[in-house]
Length: 249
Ligand code: PGA
Image (cartoon, rainbow, N blue to C red):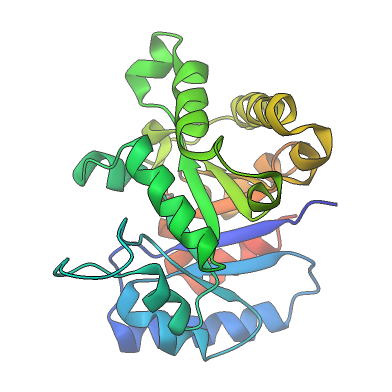
């Protein structure tokens, strides 16, 4: 049985004390739910240790890591540093990192390896631009993003990866993919893994949807058979909205 996951991506929002308030509000809300959903909070580096210490009702994720092990890389944060905070996951390949920090699939392959070597599970983001969907290239784009960054992994390592399909045109725009569009791409992604790694690994792979997921559409999106949860940006900054999304399964 694959895991159902709802992960928040706080991006560059909330200072430390605001983040602690939000995490505590969530603990209260999640505590009232009877759910088998794994909750993950993707918080800024500066918040990892503190937020990880608040509760075991959620795991904590970094939003990026360095592609280097250690050394003279001013301003970078290594996977070993992330592990030492108590974080369990790293979000890699978010479209904002691809767009604003020029991350490409081969940089991401290195980061994926460093995370897995340090026992950090990876939430690997993929998704097409609007132009790519309009020109019918969306399957090809997502396939390349996955093949080039992940298909060198062993079966064992692949079982520590979660995929987040986030069509770029839906991120932060209020425009959500329809649940049928999400299902179609998720089923395609699962078929790529089935072809490469076999059906057991593919069936156990959690594939999250991201892009303007909110309380009003989460239930519809999560009802699809290949959608195993969500990566939630804006709506994860509000404890009420986020807990309603967790409860939408
Ligand atoms: P959004 O962001 O929910 O605000 O669209 C999702 C994401 O970027 O992970």
